[in-house]
Length: 210
Image (tube, rainbow, N blue to C red; front, side, top):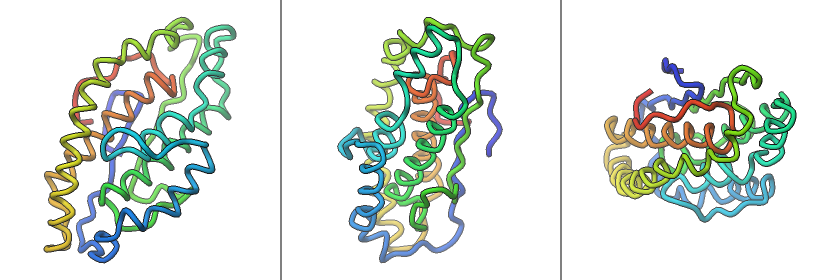
């Protein structure tokens, strides 16, 4: 995991090797089975913003236990550990699918192993670290991030399209393109950790880097 002082940390191992051109070409179809698994798991919808559709909706929003956690923080100042663990694993699973769709790893997404995706959330000390009223307004405070992410998703779509051609011709994911898409996922996960998973009151930084 790359060093960061924010309670949500995210990184992806760069594949310094030849990627599978055949599975890259058919990636959208290859991902259908694991996409069905994610739908069955969270009862979600695969339609969402940008190239991070599955990662955001299956892993970043609909699959998370948000409302019960909000109520627990608001009225009891508690964040049950098992709910936290569930949210963390759902986020990890969704991100593995998203990274696979973004062509950043040609290994099929695992339901339990981290593989090349490293996501961690710091378990909060609710009484000392979280303001009990903040979960009610975090979604509103995060609106500037949603606007920025919308443009980042659009940019990511074209970057991934460029990477698709690069992999087909060279077998390699251009490192600069890889780091950009990784940064978009990092930004997204910080916002999800703040506004949806509710693990921190620290406002997410406006940056792609750790």
